[in-house]
Structure formats: C-alpha cells, structure tokens
Image 1: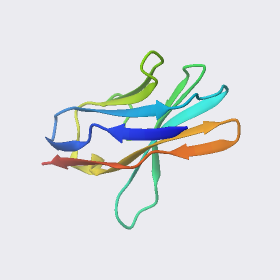
Image 2: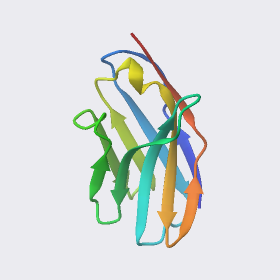
Image 3: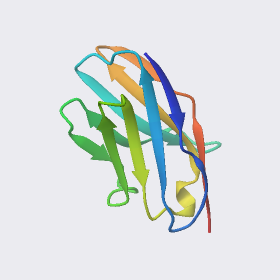
Image 4: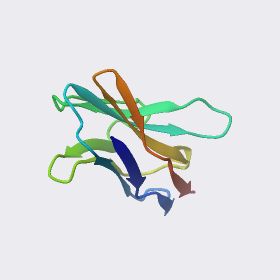
Length: 114
C-alpha cells in the first residue's frame, strides 16, 4: 500500500483546511488509519485515528475542531480541520496499520498564521 498526502498549506487562524491521504492498493481489514503531526524538535503526535469499524479517537487538543473520515469510494483518509490555531502548525502525515504492517505517507505542511 502506498499513501500520498495532500491538502496542506498556509491559512489564517480560525480558518479551515482539509487534508487527504490517498491509498494506492488494498487496505486489508482489520486496519487502523491515522493522522500524525510533528514540529521540529518534538516527537510525532497522534492527531486522530479511525478504524475499519469507523470508531474514531482524537487528541484532546483537536477534539471538536478536527474530523477524520474515510471515503471508501475514493480510497482516501481525510482530515477536516476547522478553527485552526497557530499551535496546529506542523507537518502532518498519514499512517495505516493493517494486519501488522505499517504504511506511511509523505508529510504535508500545515502553517497557521496568527
């Protein structure tokens, strides 16, 4: 499985962005799909998770603002980010865990200006 992330960019605080991670190949069930983010000098942080059961988990810092979803018709994992804050500035990466295998997409930069 190859993952390709897109949708990052520069946005003002309070604005919105939608990240998309396109999966090329079949993601076998069971699977967990994630969006992580990382800033220089810091560890990678889990932002959101969605499973094949559609159950979702969010970091406390993004609850109520971010929504992770899957589009099976397009084979994408999306992250809708609303009410963005300067502290959301980071490189965002998508990840899939499927039957013990790990797949990573390249990062996409999100910059929120205050």
